[in-house]
Structure formats: structure tokens, C-alpha cells
Length: 295
Image (spheres, rainbow, N blue to C red):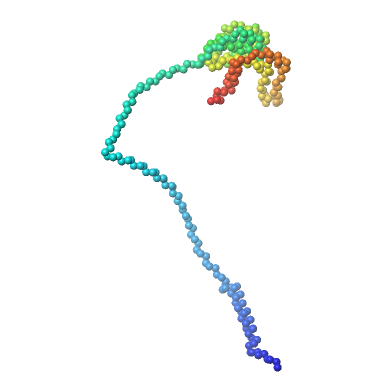
């Protein structure tokens, strides 16, 4: 006999009620989530802080305290005071010696050229009769006397022309720094006898400076380079007179001497002396003013 299942009066109602309750709860949750009732409320913002300013004061460093001065030692009351008598100093009279006046510098006149020097000058033809010109100037300076430091010292430069037989035909003063030097030089030239004939047999024209000073004299010249040609004079290649066509001037080339002629010329040159070397060095120092550069 089959068993019967007992079905109560609420057998089909319980599941439906449970489902309804579950749906109602979910609906309530969703309603609270999407409404202002269940939304989270933000806390109120705290009040803004007032700005605080910090002022920094830098005090100057305090001066270092110096060490306290030591107190003077306390002398005993019974210690007697010691007095040192002053040492007598004998009075010495002040004697001022009179200043000795400085003697002005002076230079005696050089000796007159010898007969041998004039003989050499009358035969030396190179460099516009260099030996003759130097000997002539030495003869003039020897007749001017002693040069003394002072307002009468100075220099004078002449332009001279001497005839082939040795006679003066022209004497022109180019410049002078002392009227006394010019006067003495002209007196010496006017009182000189007739000179030897010129070496070339032609009129000799040259310029000569006579130094009448206590610190310089016309030393003997050097002859070792007289066989070499003179270097060409400098001409500005860009000079223009403003009228002619512009053209750059080419510098002249130094011509090389013939080897045989150069060898024959070197045999005629005299031996240079030590005085000539010293005079050349002194002229270069004066030209480049080495005394001023060495100060």
C-alpha cells in the first residue's frame, strides 16, 4: 500500500512569502542606495587657518671681550723709590759744509789728421770718398777747441762742395743747435789751407755734421762694407699724387756685384780699428735711444 504524503494547509504558501520578503528587502536596499536618505554625507570643511608670519632678527656678533689688563703689582710701602739721574749730553755744534760747485763736463778737441791720414783720404774713392769726408770733418773739429757743457754746446750741419783741386766752393748751413758751434766751425773752415785734391778728380759734394759737445765726437768710420752696393731707398708703393693713374711702384732689387770686381775691391779696403767699431756701436745706441729704453 503506497504511503501518503501529508500536505498541510500552508504547504505552498511558505516559498512565495519568503521570495516576496527577499524582493522587498532588495528593493529597500536599492531605494536607500539611490536616494539621499542612504547617501553618505560629507563632513563640514574645517575653518581656514590664519597665515602665520615668522620674522627672523639677526643680531650682530657681540664684540670679543679683551683680556683684562693685569693689575699693576702692589709695591711694598717700605720700598724706597729709585731715581736715575739724567746723563748729560754735550752740545755738538752743527756744521754745514758749503756745497762744492760741480765742474761742468768738457771734452778736448781731437788731434788733427796726420799726413798719412790725408794721403789715404786723397786716394779712397768708395762711398763718395768716405775717407776724405771724415778727414775733413776731423780737421774742422780739431780747430774748434775744447767743448764745455753749457748753453754754448751744440751741433751744426753743413752742405759742402769742394772743387777737384781741393778748394772750397760752397758752404751752406742746413741747421744748427748752437750759434757758438756754428761760428767756431765757420772760423775753422775759413782759416784752413787748401785741401788735397778730391780722390775722383771731380767736385765732391756732401753733407757733414760737426758735434761741439762734451760727450760725443765723430769717430772713425768702418770700411768693411764699402764694396757692397747701397740698399735702395724706401719709396711708398701706394703713394699717389691724385692726378696720374694709380700704379703700384715695384721696389728696386739690389744688384749683385760681379764676383771678380768684388774680390778686387775687397783687397783695397783698409783694416778697421777698434775705435771705429766703438764709434759705430755708439752711433747705433744714440740712433735707437738705448739709454731711454734702459731706464
